[in-house]
Length: 210
Image 1 (tube, helix red, strand yellow):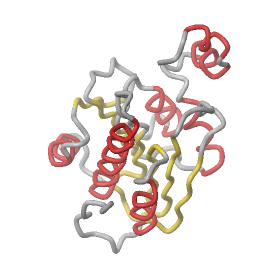
Image 2: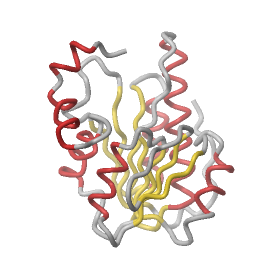
Image 3: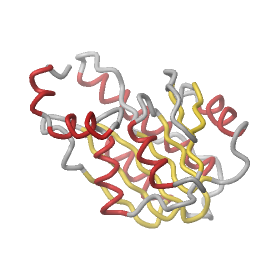
């Protein structure tokens, strides 16, 4: 839980408020975009675990009017102009893939996930849940990404990290780990970025072994 006094000193929180972003996390995606050029005008982007919509807002700005952005979350996301919102649990891969397929008839250029578990206070359990969410995002990305497409997912640094990183590395031409400047210093989060989805990997993605 972030204290109100801490938020008052947080420049990314203040910038998000001033500029109409729904979450300070918008600046994490902006940072990664400036370094890795993930989203182009006209792209189709799927944002998983999207609530409250900060990343969705940035994705829509980058994809522009010619692009398509689909946001997916268990929570209802209030309307963002030009964005298709889907309520679905991304850990239910089949249901989420079916829900996205009902509105998307072509391959996606980018799949994003800033999904994180609600912290329980049990470090081991929270790390495992982060891995489950990240692995779910990878399953869904595999179902929709076009050859050459890009992927970003958050995972907590833990004993599960290497298994997830290697799973991403196996199906993308270029894989990086990155922590944006706007990530809080005490946070265990890291973003795994895959660029250049390998078209030959067209078989269902198996569960990552840990």
